[in-house]
Length: 90
Image (cartoon, rainbow, N blue to C red; front, side):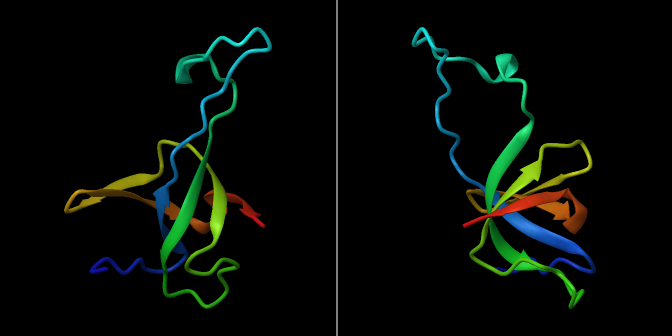
């Protein structure tokens, strides 16, 4: 990985979302979903030593406009602030 985040930033890769269905079995499009959170895997850490996540952790991040999309080769990543990480999935 040639991208090294700085400070309190974390590089993550979005994980494929599971299809959401209504109770009647109808697949809901993204625009109908009320929650704007994304499940992702931590790929690289910034230089701040106080980060609470580590490479390989699966996390829930808020899907905000402040996240920066980074494309390296065929892969797409998000560069997020540590404050955008809402939870670690155990």
